[in-house]
Length: 168
Length: 388
Image 1: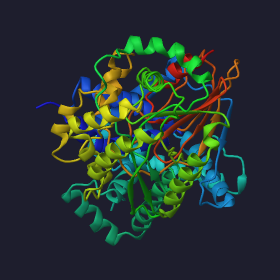
Image 2: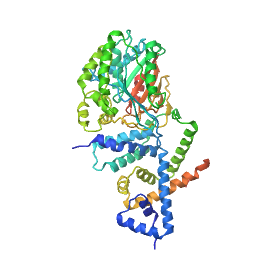
Image 3: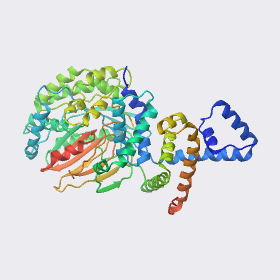
Image 4: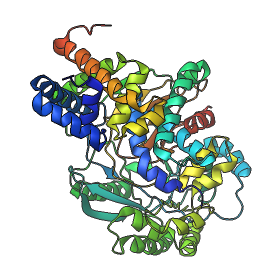
């Protein structure tokens, strides 16, 4: 029968890009990783697509981070301006951006594994799928999420009022 | 009575306990105030995290999508190499005081802020050359430029001399008409979106164009609620499009067709049509090792109304002074990301906008606009091509 790439794409692409965007903070990079992931699915069609796709994507991300040559291929940014959405008031945009930065900072305080588990759960993965995608045991997922959620909120709350985010 | 550990509490919050476990935990919670409180806290935490993660996503924005340009099968010659060789003429062409011709019928759909599609669905018309234009060569060059650019189907290039024909009355009037129609759509998105300009063609060509355009647009208008269906209607009868293309090409117009995938059972017919250059991604398979990925996915792009990330503008500077403005398209098109390779160091201004990539650059006294979904590496090629 072969892989129904169209169905795979329809079902998972948006979720994958969203997760990767949350993970990396870079939508363009997320899209590129997603494309690479789907290309690999074409090459080696998975039987259990969702955990497989996300596992591959997260692995690609890790590999990419380690690959200096790939990093250099990234966009050479001279100037990056964030523009206000046309209907949005500037102060709303500012606030949104502030929140975004704080959330990103809070996520950054998590271990890579905790962060991945959190993001997968946010994409609607059940614990079995999270276990498959991350290689963790199913029994460990609840504890991981408990820790990740708690830590993320701690850091986020500490960031309130513009105070320096505590490390730890 | 032993209390419930955090992991189990969170598993209950996430509804990941089996029936027996859940029953046991719930029984305990009913009897233990401390654990019940911790469970409530865990629930609140989980909810708050979901909300916060949502802040990392793009805000929903009004979207005006121009999903398709209609292109029929290419004429038999024009192999990739020969066409690319003609890119050397791009500079000479650019010097000509003429309007570069790109043909297309695109479908513009305005969307209201809450995402509901508007009633606006109509073909947007076509740029045509003035009488002085070298009509055959220029579109081929442009088309070749497109082909070598790993761009996804539906990419359109237009060019005009700076301050030139765009200033003439026909263009301005046509722009106003298009702009007015776009404005009539509910909550059109950023003014940065390109509204295709319409230039009145020389008289003899006009009727042929109108006929071809009417043919294509008639198909699109036929009761199509969903734009992808409309485009498939336009895409499916390749022969009709081909003959439309024939008529148009005799006037120097290249009609470009994109075949977005049908969401339902029409996948088969779309795939069957895919090998044709109707899916431009396929024709690009020769040009780059990365293209097979794009080509593999190209036939499966779905035109969706996706939320648009905040507008982001990036500037990249070229030592040669070439400047490019680029909008990164939305992720619904897998080939929609543009990446600049190192070494080319061209200036790009990147704007994320309404589901389309837009590249603008100025060189040799001409302003160029490239629209469509750009595959990875396409900017590398583009920058290479434009280096004087």
